[in-house]
Length: 611
Image 1 (cartoon, one colour):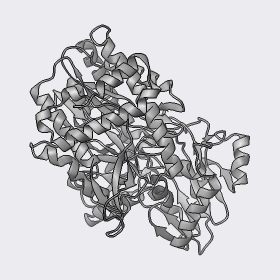
Image 2 (cartoon, rainbow, N blue to C red):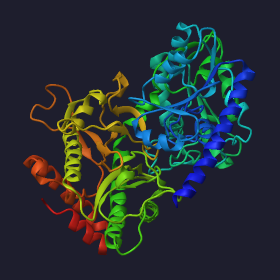
Image 3 (tube, rainbow, N blue to C red):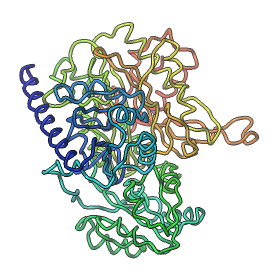
Image 4 (cartoon, rainbow, N blue to C red):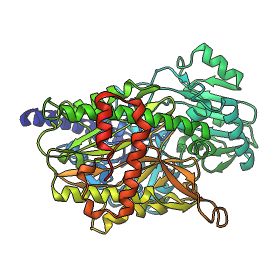
């Protein structure tokens, strides 16, 4: 699109943003508060939100998945981390909203900003229905220490959003055997056993992936993640699923009732908490339940705050799930062979854009067994666009793949037997010595962590430096985490494990069966970006001292796709690193050879040769 059209589009959008900000300021005045805080969340504290709860995006125009917006009567600021700095600069330009750069996603700079811009005796509004309990506790403590009141009963944003979308209406369906490897009744029993250990008579679950896992149900209320908006109240003998009418058909309703799960409408979940019998003990996860729901429990109900038992359980894939995941990785790898064979054959002969890549890679996956859809919006970034970690090409703004440089492709699929997430960087034309250096250092980081061994129970953040060390040695680093948990036909980002520079918590312990990404990177603004990502599985390591010093774990690399050796500076690799890469490529070739043919097979053979 010509520059003048982009500028015209920007002017229209930012003018609309300014109008919305002024409408919110009018609502702030009506409610008698001094500021509004708009988090990126919904009543389920999800990462990816149904349209009804995309309030921060609606108000600011910033489309990244992470960010907090603060609005006062004379200022507005968006707080986001380095993954989104460049994107936020572009999308906030002309809106009157200032960008505040966070050192990490866990930073609480927005609280300091509020304290600096408000006076003692004033009040801050945040919708308690979409604000996490743990975050609300921290915010309230800091504000009250400065004499500022936190009001959570107001929906200021809702008052200023006249055409707000309604609840999602897509139907819910059952995740069936053989891919659903444990019966619903079995999973409910597992959760109830954990409740009993905690002394709880009731357990309230709001996180949509936990609910999907417990109930063996799936949906499409959230883009790319097969989940649905609902709440679940589990008691000793029965459970209630709170969900919008019409989303569960009669056949599925009967199956749920047979397993002791009754249905109630979505909007009465809070009333059910308010009606718990005196003397009950309610288990909630303070990081995974909103303040509004916690406050509905009466004073004569005891509350136990600890991690959802299902969050821990679903992170540890059982043997049957692992078998399905390995099969999915092979199907996904075969699809990628087909795509990349086409790409290299078409490069320079056909018009290829970042949008073409998204279309072609999804089409290749759609041919594979069990494919349901992408697991996130494909990131295809050529040269400078690859320097935006969460870049997304649009029809209004995208690059053609031509000339020289590096093409970063981060994509994934949802399959009935698992979820994939893979990033590769490919040579287009000629690459420079600096690009080879960056690529090789990122690869060394990926290999270093992939080869690590560690004691069972090691906290994920303790492993983060292993992937960064080769980059640090050359003065390089990256702003996002090194690894995130991945669901089983569920959210592509799941916890509790995290390989990142966050403050370690006991729940982040690495356990057998966990699937995690390894994805270090380097991003040179305005030039190129490099990220190499595989998914790995925690498995017991075989060592001469096995068992004598506790259980030692290592990573099994699950992802099956060649790494572009044409981008490597071989002089920087040690012999053991070359051996690891050759062994990986041998495994990729052997696992995928029988699943591809013709041009895809020829490409596979060419890209997995030994160094």
